[in-house]
Amino acid sequence: MIPVPDVAAAVCMGVLAGFLAALAGVGGGFLYVPILVLVFGLDPQDAVGTSLTVIIFTTLAASVSYLRQKRVFFRSAACLIVPSVVFAIAGAYLTAFISGVIVALLFSLVVGLLAVKLLFQEFPLVGAIERGPFCEETCCDRFSCIAKNRLYYLHYAVWGSLAGLASGLTGIGGGVFNVPTLVTAGIPVHFAVATSTIVVLATSGAGAGIHATLGHIQPAYALSLSTGAVIGAYAGAQTAPKAPEQLLRKGIGILLAVVALTMLITTLLGM
Image (cartoon, rainbow, N blue to C red; front, top):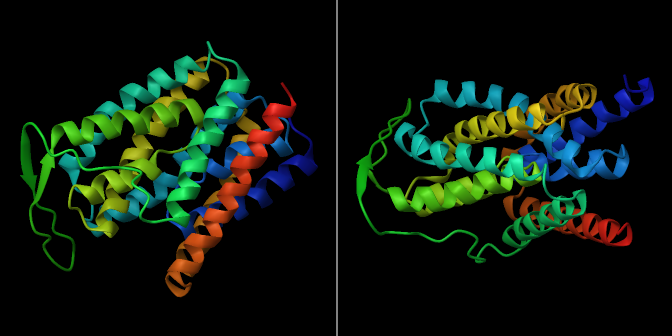
C-alpha cells in the first residue's frame, strides 16, 4: 500500500499526463514512465509494466468510442496487432534480462525520437514499404465512405514489430509508430488514430500481461494514475479542437525533449 499523499499526487499527475497526451494525440507512456521513475522512485522495469497497465485503461474507453464512430480499418488493425503483440511480449520478456539502466536509456531514445518528430514534422520517423503482397480495404464511417487503401503486408509487419518491441521494452503504447505507419499506407489521419488506438489496446494488454508475470506492475500506482489519466484524457480531447495545432505540437515536442534529456541525465548520473 502506498502513502495517501502519493495516491493524491499520482492522481493529479495522471490528470496532467492524460490531458497532455490527448492534446498531442499520442499515448501517455512517455509521461507515465518518467513520473513513476523520477517522482515515485520505481525501478524502470516496474515503471514500464505499470505504464502499460495505465494505457490499457486510457485506451479502452477511446477504443469503444472509435468503434461506435466506425472509423477503424479492421484488416489494417489486425495486420498491425499480430506483429505488435508478438514483439511486445518479446520486449517485455527482455526487460527481465537487461538492466534498468538499459531500459531507461532505450526509453530516452524513443521519447527523443518522438520529440524530434513533433518539432520537425518532415522528420521521416516511418517510411512507406510498398513491396510484396497487398490487398485493398475500404472503411465507411457514419458520414462518408473512404476510398480503398492499398495494404502492403510487409509494411505493417516491419513497423508493427518495431512498435511492439518499443512498447514492451519502454512502456509506451506504440501509437507514435502506429499512426505514421497507417498514414503512410494512405489512411486518413483521423481513421489512423482510431485504428491505432485498437492496436495500442492489444499491444499494451500483451505487454502488461508479461510484465505482470514478471512482477513488474505496481497495482496501487497503476490504479491511481489511471484514475487521473482517464479524467485528463477526456478534458484534453475536449480542448484539443480549440487549440492551435502547430503550437500544441511544438509545446509537446519541447516537453518530450525535456523528459528525454532528464531521464538520460538522471540515468547516466546514477550509473
